[in-house]
Length: 225
Figure 1 (cartoon, rainbow, N blue to C red):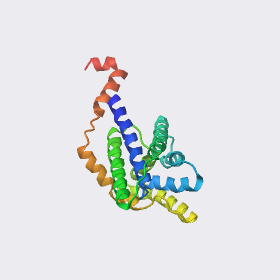
Figure 2 (cartoon, rainbow, N blue to C red; figure 1 turned 45 degrees about the horizontal axis):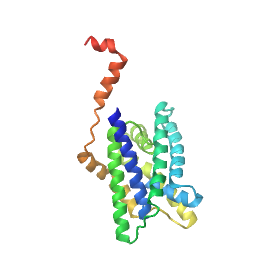
Figure 3 (cartoon, rainbow, N blue to C red; figure 1 turned 90 degrees about the horizontal axis):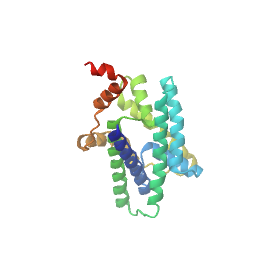
Figure 4 (cartoon, rainbow, N blue to C red; figure 1 turned 135 degrees about the vertical axis):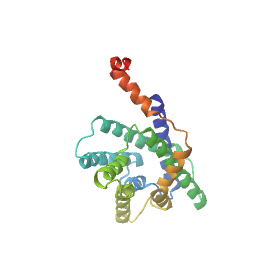
């Protein structure tokens, strides 16, 4: 369990760092971050704060789609979402003195950011302890409404923030955060995650964790086997 939590902390730090890099590069961010950038530009709220507020709305929407409250899992998903949002703001604060000039450098920083996000998501899905509400929506759509069609579920779940970002940007005549990085993230993120799945040495023995929990819950029964 401790090993899983350490990997989870590594994942959220790396994910927030990658998203902050794409924001700093100003060459397009992942769809939810891009939407938060446009709302942030319109309201003056920080990117992380907007992500948390959107996550809270999606958390409620997830339970409505699921047609029941997810219990303690919702609490942990909410805490993960809060950590992610505040960490993005922290990374952006740390990166504030850094200047990224020139389109080539901006593209490079943006691609590195997307790869960091993919690596973080690979770790996060392997650990499988919590789900960000954005990812939970994809899972619910895929399993409950779209008969396992992950491609369609991804397009719908990512199409929502893209539509929000585009609507806010066009209304204000100032589109922020939607560019090459958004396209790369939208089209290639799944392939990048598969790549890191093969090469990242993340090993969480979930069967051993389950056996340990069962042993603690039923020690007498276990001793008779």
